[in-house]
Image (tube, rainbow, N blue to C red; front, side, top):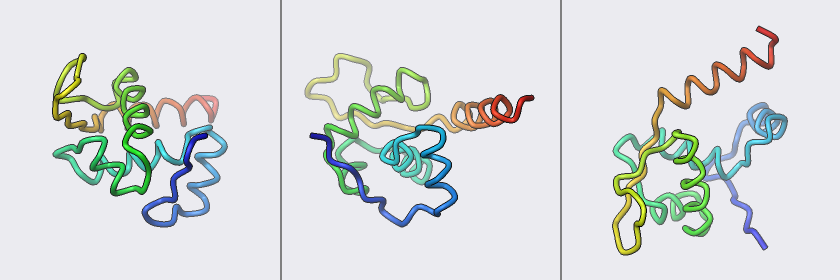
Length: 107
């Protein structure tokens, strides 16, 4: 059974509603927020400790975000036994937000 994250700081109500409307898991929003605040990157374990969830869960989200090109890993797969640091790609994230907002608004 998945363990749901409690945000490191309370998510503003408007933002929580927006993430629910768009179907963005709160955990994924917390991971992206953490990486945005740590431009030098972090490991899945560091992120998990900071946001209060299991590193395996964070790792799974990071792998999906990497496939979507929203984050970049310091080591290419296979990664067993490697220290992997993930960094956010802010330009990709900003572009995705802009394009989705434009689409939703009918532009």
